[in-house]
Length: 279
Image 1 (spheres, rainbow, N blue to C red):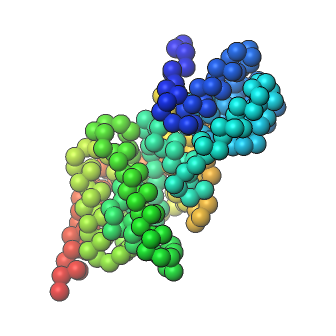
Image 2 (tube, rainbow, N blue to C red):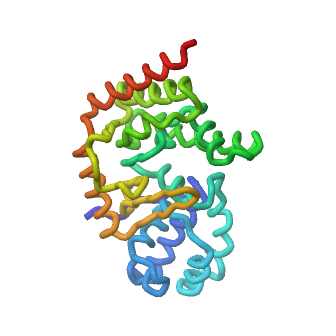
Image 3 (tube, helix red, strand yellow):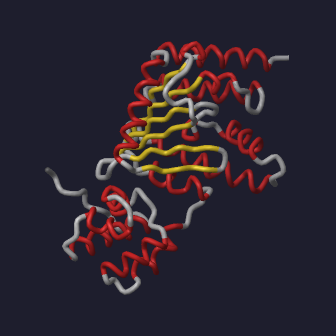
């Protein structure tokens, strides 16, 4: 079995902390499970910290300094590693997303953030915060568009999105904005940059009716599942929980239209919006 992937400590503060954590843990002769036990976390959680796919919280940093006798190293460097331009409930998931080799997402109401256009993102944030200043909305939009650059690479990460039909039908920002947003998603599919499917209303009840679901896979760390609601988010690394939601996602994919049928439907709805926008 191959050993863990070498880390580049210069790539980010979290990668630096992860590399040092792995070094100090191995130096102490502890397994990931053994280090996680007094912290009341799983060995896979420690693996995510070492890989830089999860953010180290101060409470864990202080405890690790005690266990590994690192003279406050992790506590001193934890603050720099926890700074983020994203909302608190999403920041850790966004950072993990940037390191994922594969992202599978079920979207029940909105076009996934990685696939949004500027106008669509602006409409969504304005709906979330109707009294916010333009400066606040501009910052939120800029952060979201920055995430979309993950798809600039022609192959990595693999992106597979299942859109509920409600995503297509729920108008955000007006017909012109919706036409542009759906054409953008379809174009990514036609260029084979993403795989996209639509779960039609006719599919009825399904395994992920509870809300949005994002599954992330990594080369050198266990997979993660992320669940999101209004202003809240949960990043889950428990293997049994992640496996259960992977099965749920597979069931939703099986109930969705084929990729070709989905692209045809997305483009058709986009055309309807475009015609609706005409005087």
